[in-house]
Image (cartoon, rainbow, N blue to C red; front, side, top):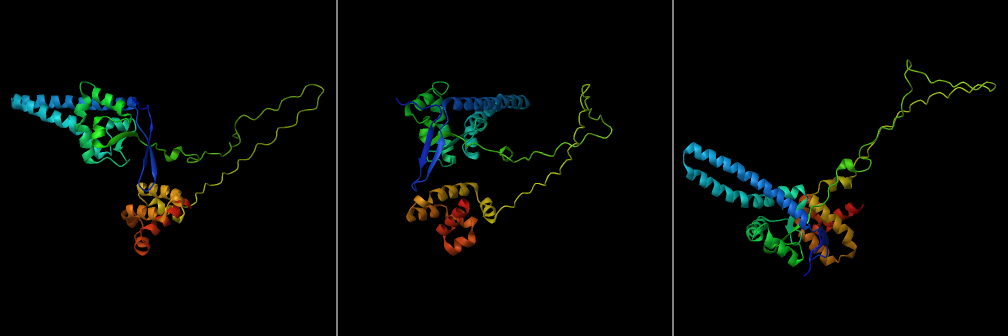
Length: 291
């Protein structure tokens, strides 16, 4: 039986021979994220119970409390995971906290239907207790998938790392101005006395005069960078990958790649798209990316 590694690599190859790599989430990280989600669901259920008790006391009818608990509990247990993953591109609060994300088998974003299927099958995964079936299936298939992932065609991966601008070298210039001279009224440096029979020590050199630091200048963005900054982030990543692999791609594959993103290319460069078509527009943006 092939067992998955704690964090293994998933490489997705598209029909256009463009590969994308993902790091599959390990069992431990998924378990901790799931525990956090269950604690959140438990907190919502506790608040729902208090609301049901208040409604029963206000209406003097226990049936109202039962309806609130049954309907509200069902919506909470299933709706929390389904709605979170559908709205946040495959992430719940627990997955967000631990940088995990559910995606399709080919790396595409999670759809509303996939989020629903993987969370409905969660009932079977949870049997007999504590995701027993899900853990067994996860180890048997060797791909880090529980039953819900197999049914929905999804997989949980580690989200890509983010680097903030201030973390880049040189993002925050350091003040390099030299210290100024001592104040006029402050203590003056003492000249040491030479031993008897020796000439006196020479006076200390004058203090260094501070040199005004040159103002920091930042070159404006080039026209190519200004165009690329206006692109959708997903389109720009696609263009970067295309530009690197273009020498190895045949003309037919390049035409199909351009056709697959022609709507995005038309929105980004409408004039060039109308004049020269999708492939010329994609090549132009690729040249800008490589320049």
